[in-house]
Image (cartoon, rainbow, N blue to C red; front, side, top):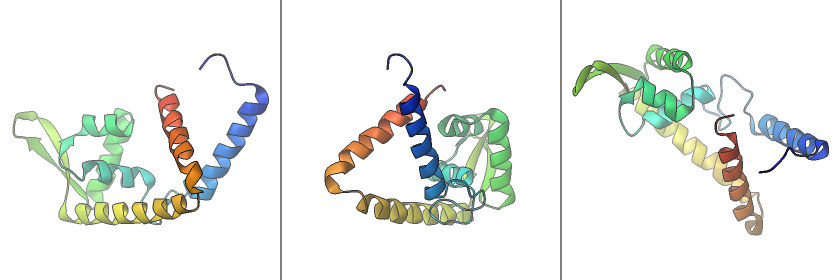
Amino acid sequence: MSGRPDDASAEAFSDAFVRFVRTFGLLDADRTPCGAPLSTAEAHAVTVLRPGRMSQRALGERLNLTKSTTSRLVDQLITRGWADRAADPADGRVQLVGLTEQGHRVAADVARRRADRLSTLLDRVPKAQRPAVIRALRLLEEASRDL
């Protein structure tokens, strides 16, 4: 992308983006946009951890979080009984984070709710415009890297 967007484009984008964030429910700290009773960060963490254990560092990288924010998030998951830490069998100096049985149930619930909500949302987008919406989301994700 070359240059900066003109003021009218930037303002229209900002307005549309902020309205989407609010309408979709991203501002509720105690509930995901899908209605699950946990924070959006917790929902993303249990989703990332669902396939198996990983280092706290790897989790932070996947979630694009700082080391201290990741540490606090993992502590929250442990406090809620959704995760635990265990030594890496290959390198005892490394602690791996994984979901407990309860954490796996939470992750499954989040996945089901997310699929239901996003399916409903996509159903409201005209079929002919769905590929453009998906392309736009991918462009935004790419443009957001390293901001």
